[in-house]
Image (cartoon, rainbow, N blue to C red; front, side):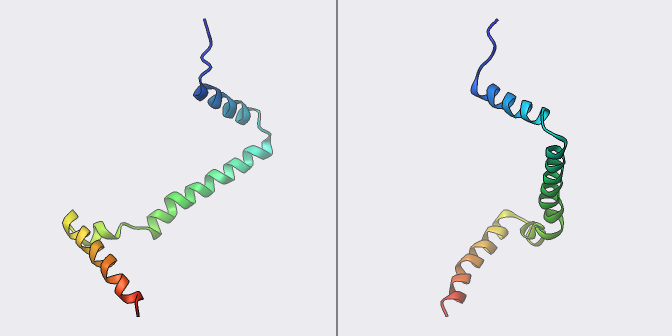
Length: 80
């Protein structure tokens, strides 16, 4: 039986072996990186990047009109 030597398989085993043989210090660093990514993606999105358009307008037509209005009127404010 011939082993599967596809590029995807070789890349997977490269990272799998690297993480499996990683030292304790390296694993701690990866835990810190994953915690930071969780904070950035989940916590900041919930509290700071709320969906403004879906809260204030009820359908796609109203949302698109607001976006178009903001894009066309915002250039007038910067020309002065």
